[in-house]
Image (tube, rainbow, N blue to C red):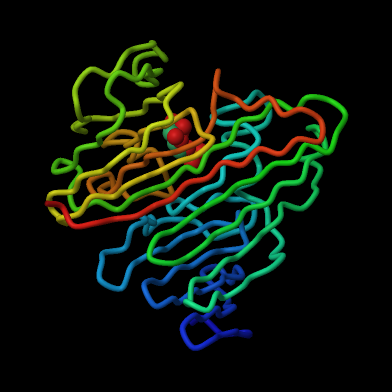
Length: 296
Ligand code: TA6
């Protein structure tokens, strides 16, 4: 049972600090338009729902909520590398660290802004010194801003990605639009480089594609839930589309065997050849805005 530790509120917006799943500290946000949940573990947004809509984010029923383990679903923060790295594990260390809550504010209209900072750690010491902050703004839409400042005297080359899991009614009734003409690496075909030719992507098997040099917004049209999810991004040249399908779903202990029917990842960042090369003293910010509207 969640136990409220403290809270702050104004006439329209509310922020409550709770013990979440696994007794990990969690922030519950209520605004006039929406609700959200954010864990300090990984600064991980696990829930966002507008008052008149269906939850936007998929969260596996089998997810772990424990130190050192990533949460399966919501919006994992991938930094400073994407994918596997020799001797260092998968998808960087940011998503399994306890981030520091630096500030939160409730605007007069009731929208809520929460700012986190990634603390130093032995993992971070293997990379050039940097300051990493993450700002989550909850209103009618969900806005995410991941900022990296290079505090070292050398160029810092890193990958970043907001690895967002979206809830869908049935994956077979979903189309993903916005990537036509983009070049991608196909992980289910030995990373073969291909070009997206159809107007929309339909998913009827495992899909794991890293689209490169694309700054386009992406729309997920969901016929069963009757909505379109829009993923807008700034300072992002890569988009990853992933659904594990049957075999991969069965291989993941923290993911239900049948959950592939009800989710799709559309991830926004800068990976591979799009990695960020950050000059000493410079700052780079990845911004993603998530919104949904009725399917016309
Ligand atoms: O973003 C797609 C991907 O790289 C897939 O290949 C799959 O590994 C997925 O990320 C999830 O990775 P994780 O380490 O969270 O199990």
